[in-house]
Length: 171
Image (tube, rainbow, N blue to C red; front, side):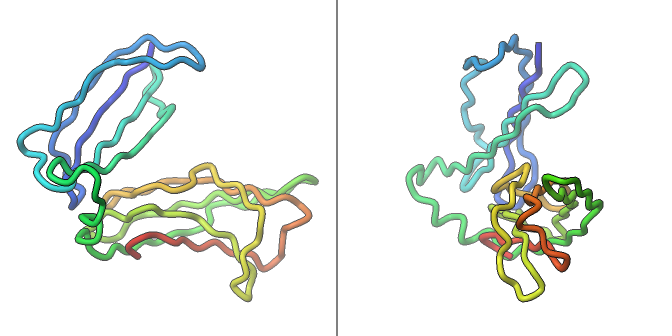
């Protein structure tokens, strides 16, 4: 048994509604738990965040969807969200024979949603170090939200001077 949450946010990242559903889940199965209508308060661009948590409240899955009921096939509304700013720091760096794993905490320091964040590992000259496997690929951060991600770099690609930065649609 798990709990599914559907939280709707306006374009500024303020919650406008939240629904909770208890679901019985099985591995590798699709479960229809509810149809999610947009409430009257969801006018304009709306972020729909779906989360699945286990019995202890640990997040198993999180997915974001941007919708605009008036313009369901156009995403130009994202242009009006405004600039976001973020801060990040490397919390830990662990190496073994196969890889180096970086744990990074990133935080949205602005009043705008940070759109489509992506972690990049680079050397001192700014050249991308590839491959680098991140626990979260592209994700959004609400104002004041923070997230920890891990990035694994295979041993043959590790550079002593490697650093992490982030790209996004609006930073």
